[in-house]
Image (cartoon, rainbow over all chains, first blue to last red; front, top):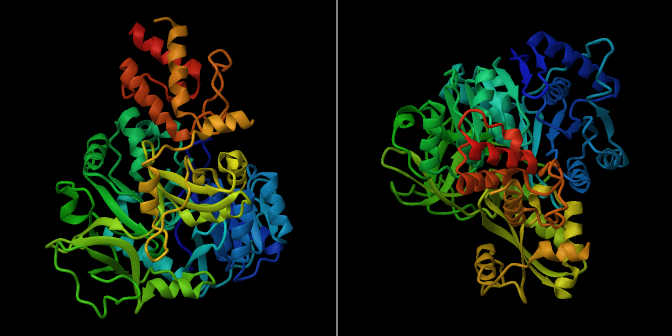
Length: 508
Length: 88
């Protein structure tokens, strides 16, 4: 990737601020450390922390030496980190002072070279390592979207697909509103990393970094916006549930644009954000990791139009087609598009499409046909060609914008000896919109639930732990023997969940 | 209502939102200055349910200037908010 003009990096907590000159010094220092550890082009570097200025500098240093970066959720368990590092065949890992000894141990045991951004990269001369010219086709990022407990599914973006993303976003959205961007989303997934952060920062705009989803921060969001003269932030709807009710609005009038994505945005919350923020440029951004996140949204004339549930808007650097058939049964090249107002399967074509799933050509072939990507979403186009979403085929549980794959939880539960059958599904949740429910057929009923809970807690990141547990005699199946998670949920909710809290207290 | 009565009511409420594996909340056992989130008693976003409780049970409007979100970290802080509201 060619050299770019960088913006400043500012941390909300602690007051760290690196201007572009300091960032170049930090980059040189980190490149020297990577080079001294014999990092080679094509190596994969797992970064086990995020939402810090150091994260972005480590990422860019690795890129400038030709490596591919794998950002991992800070909350992942050692088991999950090990699974992902193994699947990605990472040679390096970068940790920080908050990374636990158990995670460092599994990374060391796997034979990775582990660098600590808070110790190995401090002090010393900023000896510049040789920068390597990068082919655009080189892998830049692997973002794991599921399978952290079993068969990981890693979305691979090349420098070419990322550059295509940023170029098209700049053309459709401009850069001016992003000149002082706040990142309050996690930096290990597409929405937070590629779009909220890297798009503006690598184009020379300043990036103000906050800890993700921190309630104390959301409750003073207006003050943070004023204090840092924020012009733009991206968000997920669950953040606004807290911010709108508790934070006073920003008063300095710096805020120009807000994006909301990763989960359905209701017209009510949309209107409330407009009223609170004082800007009408509140865009419902539709994004998918495989397409580098933001791919469509509410811009142009629609930005001032009346808000509607499910309204997305126009494509941002992509073609959108809605056809009657899902992946495997036809493609937009062979099928007629649905009539306006008629729901169908949403397909996308964009130069920002991923190279594929890491090491899983079978999975890639299942969703990419003739250059088109099958999103798994159901939607329709209106008379003006604007996209509206009305459902999805994918199984993911959308917990406040964070995607949890039921299969990941199933895979861990199934490995526990007490579990005969398991099915994880989405349940409604007052805080997050959706949360994790689980139906279990146990060998000995309730007797081993406490042990199973401890097992899940050991292996799953905290957000993936089921909050509602149901014991059933059998998991209902379709006439063809398949499990429909929605049917399982509906069946379970006819009965009462297990009082797991009381059970755990009795066991402790 | 006295501070103790408010505390008893608050703890009854906290029992309804505490995490699955949090220890039982006994009226007298909880240190008022323990962080509810950091101690693992509640999920971080469950703070929104505490906000709802304070709005509905005590008429507190958080958008009013002068309320510090840090108050929601502990039982003592929440009780201070309630008393402030009652006094105001």
